[in-house]
Length: 357
Image 1 (tube, rainbow, N blue to C red):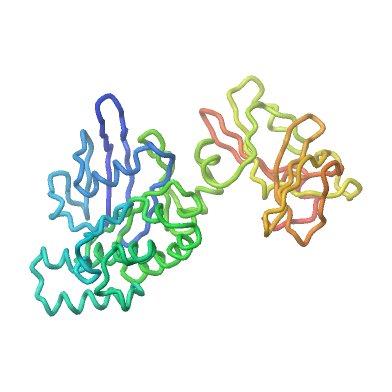
Image 2: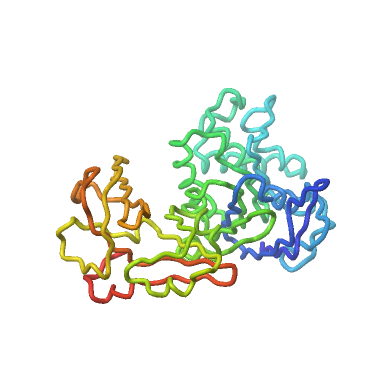
């Protein structure tokens, strides 16, 4: 199902939950609605499902206006954050519920439910009740129940929020494979950027009820449309004032303007104090903090001008200690003003050995 949302609005009393939100989603895509809590993500999801009525705007399913359609007429499967399984029903009956409501023939129900049980890896749980299952199993039952009536659109509200971190990572991979197999257009709400980046075909960043940016995870990470997007997706060094950094003469153009500079940690290359890095291209500094992260070292470095930057160092590279003098080379940075977004490359980069970023 192809989805198009135009100028969607929703208020709850004096609170503007959704404000002129517009976006399109291609059929068969898995799309994440990502943003801070209270940003309007779940309100958009509930309006798509027909559980909330928009105050303004249009929702189109495959080119047809859907605003007036009932929940049942929309052909949507919904997985709630708390699973919302029927506690008095077995796994089989929970999954079969939507098919029974549609008055599907018993033989078809049996075949469809058993097929979903096998796909979901729930063999042996058919006669168990929800309170006899693990969190991961209950989540799979919720997915199976939503998929059983063969919905045209699957909506997931924080689908893994109630599951511990280890199982959540496993279920992300499982969800991606599941959607690839079924080909169902799917929208999921999350505030977990790692989850969205790992799972989604596209991400829609929502803030204060508005769409900040829509694109692939790669596009949003590497070409953020705003300082908010850049700081929300991934990690960044955030510098609020115009700076003087070697290799970036363009920064002088922003003197007196409202500007933010963001530097991704992977854009910072570290060298020991005596390494052959041209001083006009790099920055001298001192390592202030070092923390072991399992697969890397986290380093905080103070430059001579007092600016502090953090970056990461692979564990198989030179290990620095607090107090070590270093030279760093900043490959690129992002500059954000109210009127423009620019990515600046270090002017001296062409004279250095290439690095894979």
